[in-house]
Image (cartoon, rainbow, N blue to C red):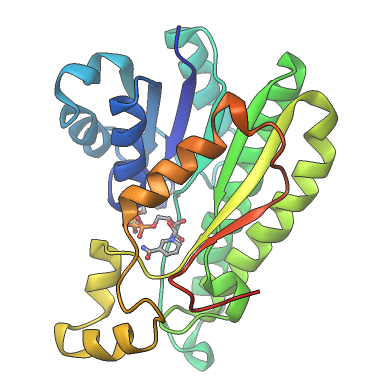
Length: 246
Ligand SMILES: NC(=O)c1ccc[n+]([C@@H]2O[C@H](COP(=O)([O-])OP(=O)(O)OC[C@H]3O[C@@H](n4cnc5c(N)ncnc54)[C@H](O)[C@@H]3O)[C@@H](O)[C@H]2O)c1
């Protein structure tokens, strides 16, 4: 039997891309998002392979959300091997205009959501002695961001730190925890905040002069989620076209 992966935020954008990639590669996949109907639509796009998937409603901000999702996944597939913490809110409000309410909303979704996923599913993985967690961080969490908001960038910096702490805590139990830090990808979320006329200016600040491929990020997530990735943990893999070199 193939491994089982849960992808959060699988209804749209990168999460959708990753969930469909896992299905194409023969994984069994739990696609989770706020709306079951939306994530079911993504699953239906997989055609034949949709039979290896399940659509779940999950709000990553809720303390009991991941326990419920885990119970549904194990009831359906019998087990879970990998978690991709992808769901996030990407807001671009200028720093001096961010309200406390909006700040909390972004941090609660992005940082607490990832924390809850790592803790709840990480505990289950540790008990079984095997697991893979892949967190979606961002270039913004490393360089403060360019187009994205301060709350978003700070949440992504926090995810990079949580990745290391969970990696250290779970390493002895066969569980790896890693982050992917993409730069701007060719996705609707990026095109929505960059008007067509500003695209040349964006591309001019990217050394390789193009947006990143969501498909490549999906393949990277699948590599980190695979059995063979046992020697990578606590890492952040940069996929940013050379915008930030370290
Ligand atoms: N798009 C990029 O260029 C880029 C760059 C760097 C990092 N990332 C990261 O990749 C991930 C996906 O980005 P995207 O551009 O596809 O975003 P998106 O906004 O297109 O999709 C995010 C998905 O998460 C879901 N979601 C939001 N809040 C949720 C919640 N509380 N519970 C469950 N699901 C929730 C949304 O419904 C949506 O389906 C994010 O973590 C983002 O920070 C993206």
